[in-house]
Length: 191
Image (cartoon, rainbow, N blue to C red; front, side, top):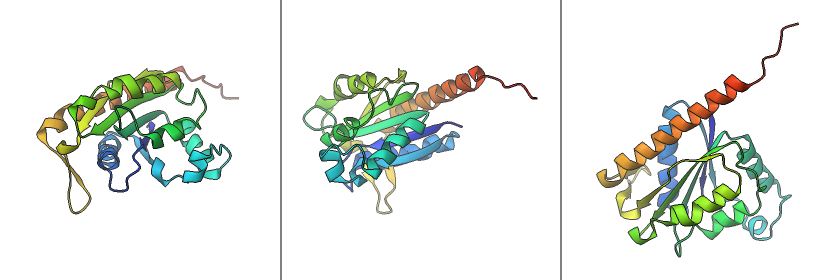
């Protein structure tokens, strides 16, 4: 079973991005993965903005990245790029923190004009951090995400099928990577 870190880079506590990620967390867990959520907005602002690499919460976040087999990174799109909050965390992580990991980039936004932000803003930074395999990312329009009164998410038909295909392809890539890591692990001889 692979461990997937699911990172929301949204600064809003009522974020559609975070709720979408938590919805996908359930789908990935249902496919046999252990999913660990991380909402960047819960990290101390002073530590993020002051680049306090030694702050216990920043150290914990770094360790979550290091222990994960794969990472989902979700962000709302602001000014045609990923959120500044997400950037502030990524800036505090080691340059190679994504080495050996499969990564799924996701973004949400109010306009289809921002669709390319996944490939032209988010993907390059994830690649620069050493991600071994960045699967096809996806952009979901805010209007396709409905948050119900109980906090659950409903995705309309325009978003659900494609998003689930992307998430399932990510899950399969993670499973393949996990199986390859197990099969290439050294076998110790019994003494």
